[in-house]
Image 1 (cartoon, helix red, strand yellow):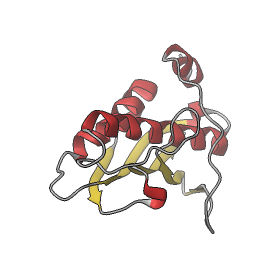
Image 2 (spheres, helix red, strand yellow; image 1 turned 90 degrees about the vertical axis):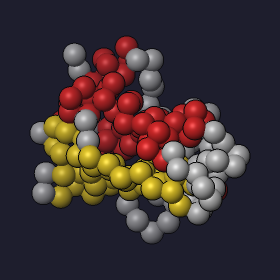
Image 3 (cartoon, one colour; image 1 turned 120 degrees about the horizontal axis):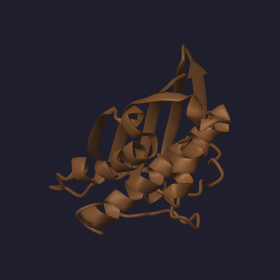
Image 4 (cartoon, helix red, strand yellow; image 1 turned 180 degrees about the vertical axis):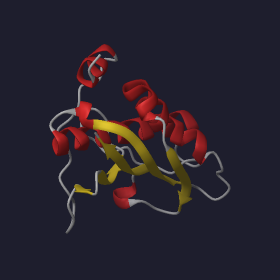
Length: 152
């Protein structure tokens, strides 16, 4: 099954790949790897998913924010590659969680992205990752994720 067919089966339609908000590019292909700039949490309607985990948002809301970041990553892959079947492996995710002091469930929040990438790409979606809590993220969003992707 193609990745496009898998997305359709999962009921996921990709948004337009987000344009950079400052002086950087959304992705760089080098040495057989696609490096994708951080994708911030955006709802299906394009609204930012704002808030701090452990203060304004719970783990379930954080997981959904991370899932939405992963959809943004896939949209960037589509924009960069034209064909998602060129993805050989999701290599690494860096997951940044806007966290209140004492909030320690960043790994569970990150699973929102990890679970989606495995659902979409199968074994090729299994990846290394870091999930860290930060004091603040751009525009007050709940989660930001960047990625490294190996290309076929």
